[in-house]
Image (cartoon, rainbow, N blue to C red; front, side, top):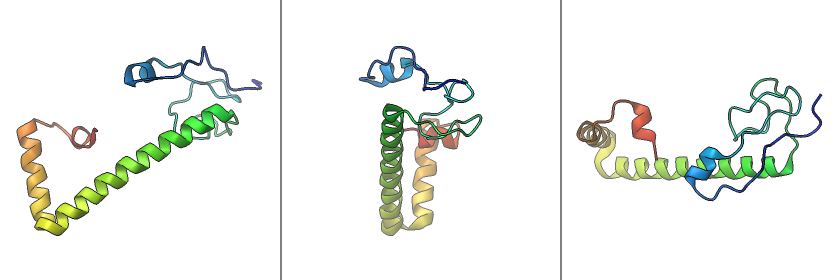
Length: 110
């Protein structure tokens, strides 16, 4: 069994390119690469990951995601209050048609 969370050369990611090239941690219990850096549990076996640096990074990622979702919901709420739900949906549909978005995932990308 692996005692600690393995990580190859842990440089700090300074921008999006570095974050994409950052080493992928593996589970201390099963040794598989973790699929997400948001969870405090292994995606494969469910074992807890007790590396303080990993836990700190996961908490920061979750907080950033929560803040982005909260901001998006506030914008939607303000638009709904201003022009009604149907007006907001119609505006977003027209915006998506002009931008050439293919799917809902394209609309949700930051």
